[in-house]
Image (cartoon, rainbow, N blue to C red; front, side, top):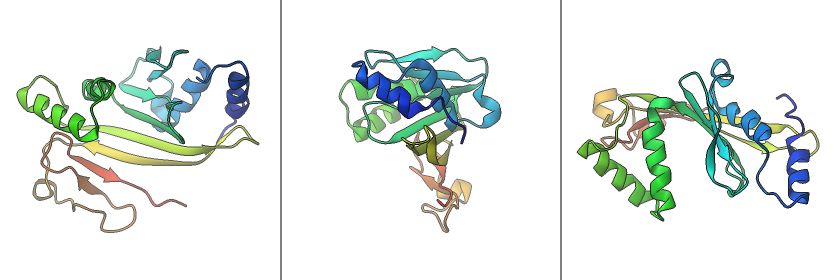
Length: 190
């Protein structure tokens, strides 16, 4: 992985000045790690302002949205998804901000998709990348990406996908028969 202008040094400098939110450049450079390489340069980037609010850091010109690592959560995790998922993702963030737990968010979005008040694409991809910031090199080590392909209301019967991975890295269907049905692909870790 390329040096990211020493992100750990940036984080240390930010924490010394009383800020806990990484700067915009760092957030953009790391948020795009989740997107396919050919989509990174033109993707929209969502990240965090000085108050910790999710904001648009960069308007994109392609079909991808990337989200920077949430500085309030442990570990490093960034995501990228097709822009057709934005209403679904935005609604999830709104409901979470209202204090709903994961099950309540799931149930509310299911209800809204069925009612036609929340649009869900018939298919769309989400990428989630995790890693370990390396204090010595300033790189993000051990990058790992898992893949999610949303196919609302799909089932084991309609796809032929099993409900659990039949082998390491093999695709399987999660949340079958719901608005959030998706194919999971978790490549084996090194």
